[in-house]
Amino acid sequence: MGNPPERFGAKRTMSPLIVLALLAPQTGLVAKKAGWWDVAVAYPRFTAGGPVARAANAASAARERKVFAGFVADAKREMPDIKKQGSPGSYQLDTTPHKTADNRAVCSGYVERYDYLAGAHGTTGYEVLNYAVLRGWAQAFTLKDVFRRGEDAVGQTSRALKSIILAGKDAPSGVASGDWKGLTEAESHRFVVGRLGLLFLFNQYDLGAGAEGPRQYLVPYAKLPGIDRKGILKGLIP
Image 1 (cartoon, rainbow, N blue to C red):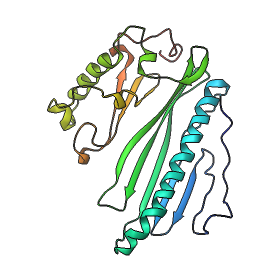
Image 2: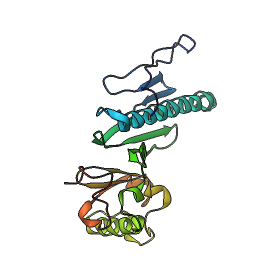
Image 3: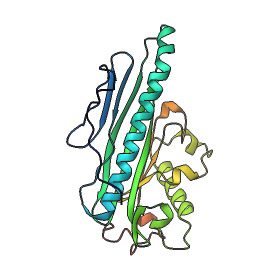
Image 4: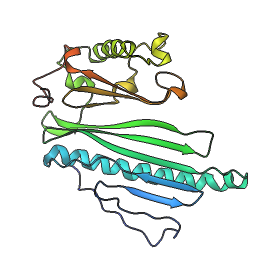
């Protein structure tokens, strides 16, 4: 189940140029050194209570700490050389947390992450958190877990996504050209659940050129005949 999220405060062993603070009321970690790095990391926290929310919050807090610590360490290691080269660039990381389901049965949410590494431009991508009770205990669930046993979850969802994307006015180049054949292993895990359907989150470059940006596509449950309406999503699907 995990322990409750830790609270963070400034540490005496840190440089006075780095500020580590708790962002209320959500959560979050911040580190700043003017002109060198600007880091703000916040992951979702679920308020429903119970074992599912506790497991989701423990995973979210752990990921938040790991991402923050790793990015700050990278910035401290790389930025001195970048500054020696006369670059005005800096390291920047900003995450925005979102929740799509927050109840005692299902907790689902994602983080929109923007990284800038002192280059020409930054990149945007997503991370997800999906927790429910499976096989008697609260744990992360995958796409196949929201479909009935034996159903081709990836195939059904890929076909529905392609139809939805191509029906839109601004289909990314990879889908329009036919280069995107369907969900990759990584893409099949990058979804969240809500009352309207499954929301799939595609990172920058997943479906086309970087300039086309990240994409989000909602697949209504009605377009997924194999969805398990009596399983972990029971009560969430209208």
